[in-house]
Length: 483
RNA sequence: CGGGGUGUGGCGCAGCUUGGUAGCGCGCCUGCUUUGGGAGCAGGAGGUCCUCGGUUCGAAUCCGGGCACCCCGACCA
Image (tube, rainbow, N blue to C red; front, side):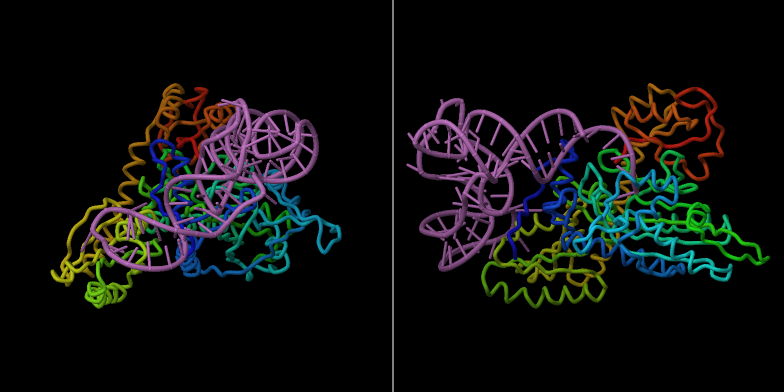
């Protein structure tokens, strides 16, 4: 095995969250910096988490009728210019290829920042009649955005994602699709990643460049800053018009299809770290953890080892039969104590210690990662207890995150209160909002933005005046400082 | 793009003020003893001190120019 530093994180989460985050990501070997500025390697342990995210989302998307495809990395620069808002949104972040094979290209190619344009160019060839609709596509890909300020997983020049692109006959169908995906994401993030999210709509200034409107999911990180966990857009007819995608309707009229796009990214891995991690390192939700149970065999002499080995094998087998992802750490060049810390750093939800004493007493010692609570378990109930424990850790992480969010959610009805909340405590703050340009700017001066207009309650409840200007509010929404 | 910081064995750093044999901790290799919360002892390997130029008998150290990376702020999944 290569040289590895497996110290517990040197930084304390409370003292410097940002330093703690980077330290934790590096030391737990989720990712590492490379020679290329703003880019990172996703190391095997981090990639294993991403693969589990992929597996789950991919399965859900297929179950709802979506098909995977793959579109090119290179997009003609002129494509980006076809949709006005889209160019404006992405132009500053583009990486552009000007040379190939030693020759200057006649038209520069952009490295995709997202694939709407190249996909719509193809859909214009593929869609002719209403019988060709809906088109339900997804692709797993890398994208590049030349970010200035980067941070592992949260914002890197290149990142991995899934991007869905669909086309429909009507506005309603497109909206239903966008909502369906939002719902799919929310369930996945809450149930698998144990991260509670707030769902809602983005304001004009926060929506995707080129969308009619954007649905979002916002979560609160361990430092009370918000993070956008994924988005689902109703693109209206903006891209079909820009790329001249049309279909013959049932009544013979020529129409532009209504489309959606939606994505979740490797950022989710960063969110898991920032929501659940503690001073000892990661705490992975069992459903997403690459390794759910690590068995640490403990022995002194060779004869001890001979004695525990068959016992450990039986326990391992027992857990494997219950579809538990289990790893046995037989390394003999490090001590058990080292392994305890090592696996805690990596966030494995449950550790089972088995030594000669346990073999003699027909038991094993369980230590759960979330609370680090330690208890002996009888041999015959190991499997059931392990399953139960994993469930309990999953629950408990979700509950903790939810409680944290509750404590860090408030409402404000004066600008002073809002400013103080943002400055002192962070978190989500509910306000009544007019969404005018000047008020948005004033909010930006407080380093905050409107994160979401919650779907139902946001517009239904009686509104007071805008917290900023005192004019009539348009909706009630959640503002926060964010990543 | 503004502000700050750093560049010295794999990693983390000291040395620089006041030029003169390149050092410490961790990790790595070998051996013995160890192993229920980050093992001990002994021996060993490993460095064009970011780069280019200048000053000097002599530069990691002083001077000048580059470059790179990291962190903090406005844009972004």
